Image (cartoon, rainbow, N blue to C red; front, side, top):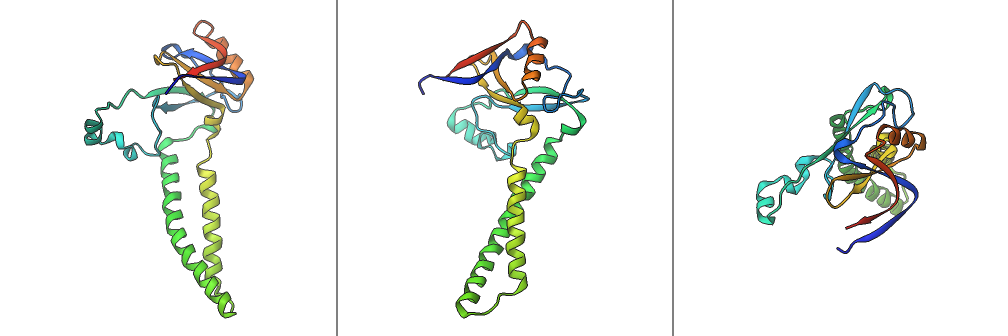
Length: 198
């Protein structure tokens, strides 16, 4: 893949990975941070909902493709009590949504066939058929909400890494938090308006 230049409307922050310090305020709301949330990313690799779903976690696949797992990068971001969440609870919630959606999609297919058959015969459908349709739609809406980015993921977005993995590019939604971050890391961070992706 050839290098390409990416330009940003609003400047993003480039900071040295091993020198990074986050301000002790919440990046979402700006209140005083009382907890720390670990944001983990794997540079250059697709992220999966659960690590066990990643084919690279299977030793035989890694050996066949002659690849290594690489080093995960973790950022410890201070957040307030209201915006703290457990990643295990979040994964369980998303997994439960996926399982219930699969079951309800099968039930919805049968319900729609029954509704179509009843319309063809000119008779009214049973109440339970419409209850299944309503429950399936509600479950799909809950799933969309579950898979939206968390407030912390929208407030501190990891844009990427430089080719040597020495620096990380961060985009902050809150510009006052970005200023506080730059003041916290005066020597090791700077604003950039463009990057080169490889």
